[in-house]
Length: 151
Image (tube, rainbow, N blue to C red):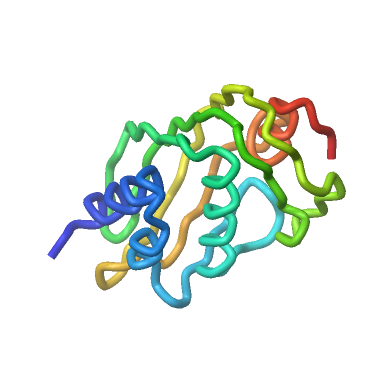
């Protein structure tokens, strides 16, 4: 059986490869994601968000560092970046997005590092918590600011 750290790494490998079906196999049916934005995301909502992000940034890649675990908790730092070449539509994600569809800009976006905590139970990720302090430069707001779009 894979360790929690191996499961979380494999989850990111699947995302970076654009294989969101495989990424979804690492998430429990009762998965909850807690991000830099208020509220939580279910498994389906998280996969939809990843699908929209990969459509907007097909070459999105993650570099993981500081990976460690304590029991069922896996902690890490994720560095991500990619070129925004496709349209991005987050209007249906319940994030207060009033900007509609953001067309591909061609801009290279490097996200600030985010600190995550994953809970892995029975071989599945049951929760993802972004514990990075919120600033205007990270999360959805930071991403839109990097594209020159205001909320």
